[in-house]
Image (cartoon, rainbow, N blue to C red; front, side, top):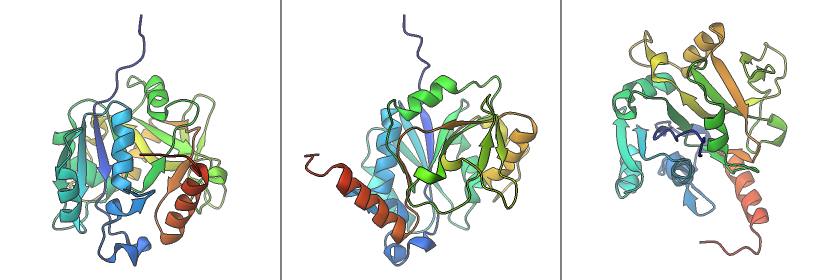
Length: 248
């Protein structure tokens, strides 16, 4: 008997950012189309989502968004829909809220387009699904050690207790875990959130207060491709990792 949890079929890729830290690369190319290992960042994200059972992906668009739309319109698997933020950016929370009609009424994945990950001993998304419990969770954040992260500079973001409950890093201290930009969210967390632009941090803070924000530590590599230096770091890793390996 197969007791494995059913995949979450819907996901959102946050791809509307201006890519300022990636300039001059992003002067004419939107960050989602910046290539890593000869493939656009957003294609890497979609590959991982499909691997995890996702069939429908919503992508928010703003800066040079027409290029991203043209690139993804050819996709047959998964089904891709677009959520334009033409007048102004809606930030992470507002962007997801605007796309809720495309994401359905059940929990879904949200992924930053500049987050790239490789699976460890087990598939990350399958592990997360095994831990996801909508009865006690509003959100499940995928976390990683700052020490082993590529392209990341910071003090970490969260602490996690033995039960998996997440709390914020105290100011001026160092936390053992950073947030990878990969998460599972319940659509109900957007109830009573503001109209227009707001950060997902508002939702995390409410979930922390209600003891409903959980975290899972990723056991594979994770890369933040947010700057030219970060891009060079991940490219160097890929060349070293796959030296002498023939790939498609």
